[in-house]
Image (cartoon, rainbow, N blue to C red; front, side, top):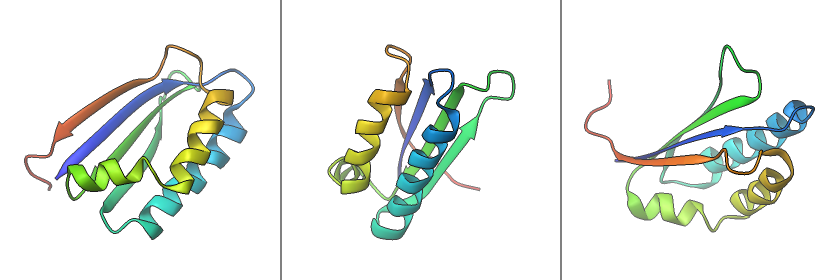
Length: 99
């Protein structure tokens, strides 16, 4: 299994619009991508503008396929409007075990 963890900070005043866009993307990923096992959207408890995404895929190919879906491309366009430039950090990990 493969996971992608993304950290980002969104622009002030865009929280509701960002959450709407990312929730649609997460629902579509889980519904339409057989290789997407999990798509969690997490908010920092201390900073209401910092978010973390945790995505779990069956393998690297499923994670790569995600990047070419309509919902991913729509979210990328939305991210350009909502995410503060230079704050997005991506981590790609091998999942060793799941409890």
